Image 1 (cartoon, rainbow, N blue to C red):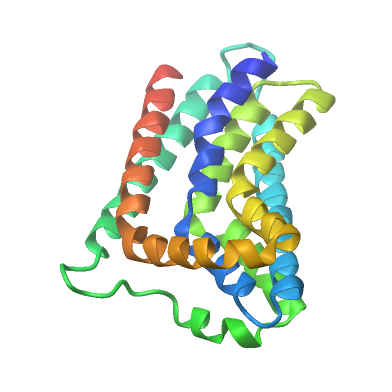
Image 2: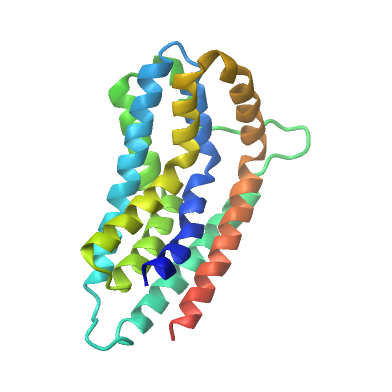
Length: 224
């Protein structure tokens, strides 16, 4: 059963991991004068935000009726269908935001102030981007529905949440840890990656949200 749940949450964890904006924010912090302080703060906030979001939705989902093995399936199905439709809407919105040929990609204004960010601010920013961001909330809700609805033993549920968190946070965790180990060698590759992600942010997110939305709709239909 645990293996099945892990298989169900993998696409959702990847959906959180492949988020250009937090990756760009982490890279900008790594290229700033306070790289070690701010990047670690951002990473901690990002990881804790992911854990809080998926745990909350797991606990909420676990209180659905479970006496009859099929009792919670229609409820889960409706939740998954709604989440899938929301992902479609987000995908459409991202597609419309893609820059026109020859136009620079628009990034959040707060990124211009990255150089002045302190540890608490970096922590709060990481937490907000992971726990409060609408797209990540939808992913966490989908994962929590899968984990809580599976009625796993507490130990198994904790393991699944840890796996979800590690995968979802990997794209911020890897560059931050890599930079702390080999800062000089990673500056140029990180700067090149930042530029590419900024340019392709809207397209990456639109395709990602569309694919995961289709998967969520499929899960919802299969629950009836």
